[in-house]
Length: 414
Image (tube, rainbow, N blue to C red; front, side, top):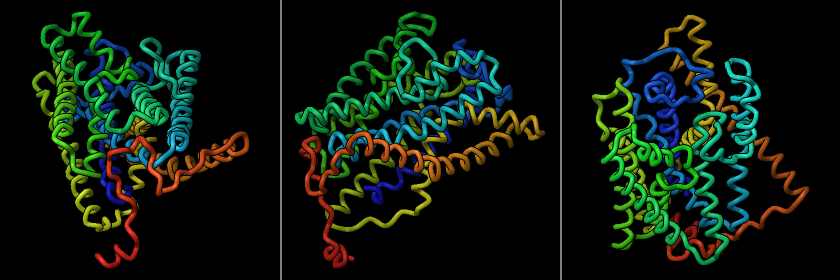
């Protein structure tokens, strides 16, 4: 599946850059309008970009795009793995980058932050263990809230795999209905209240502080699963209805959060809440078209063309870039502005520097940590047995997954 969906890598990288620009050029100063303190009180860039607000305020929708991609990728991984393989694969993928980036963020906060050092210790431990902070408490970095949603989704997939009764379709249906009910109710409640009302704030609480419940974002993971299924076989009419429901549910979530932004932040009061919806819809359409092409190619036994190696590199850079851009990136902007660069140039130079740093992390540091983790698990325990390609787990029942075409057949077709 790697070659067939290589476009997910540059798309994933693009979402991370969009979120970074949102945080650095908009949220770093606009958050004060809402009055909810964030990590910016420690390393605020004190560089304002009000003229860039119309082009940067909706960058947060990259998170919703990434959740769709995650649903797709995790479905693909789970369908080819045993429960043990899946869990180990997720741990080996997530922890190395978190350990490096969380440590870098802690050092920046200790050196350049204005808060007491003791205030960062518990959030740092939570980050290193990838334990959600809960509704109360503080993140080491505001961007870590998405890891709560991601790990909750991985846990859900793992439990479904262990059950040997819940299939990928069951999980997609469950998330579709569960999240659609909440987002529909939220849209109704928010349309009858204002941001100053308590019930309004309670509904919004489930987006970030209570992200692990997947009430807001379950529809995005579900949509990713449906797109993965559509890449392997034709969807039934009922499943197409489910796709439509997840799309409407996702659009509703984006709409009411965008409306909250537009209502609360004067600098973007004249913008449209439909802009982030259109950006998200364009990304989803791109994935859907690629999924359809993949299904047609595989049905015909035609191998997909090899993707450029640098596309995969962009995909690997995405994770550490997302984890480090907020605090480490802001610190780099500080240093560049203090060195005499103008604010706009500092942002782009900082992104270039950060991409290079993250390339080094994913290409050199992460593999070393991953290797050490694998050796430690082998020494103290036992690695899960690799599932033969001829055996598909029950979790993938009903997907009609193709097995690799024989080399002779591919050669004949070419």
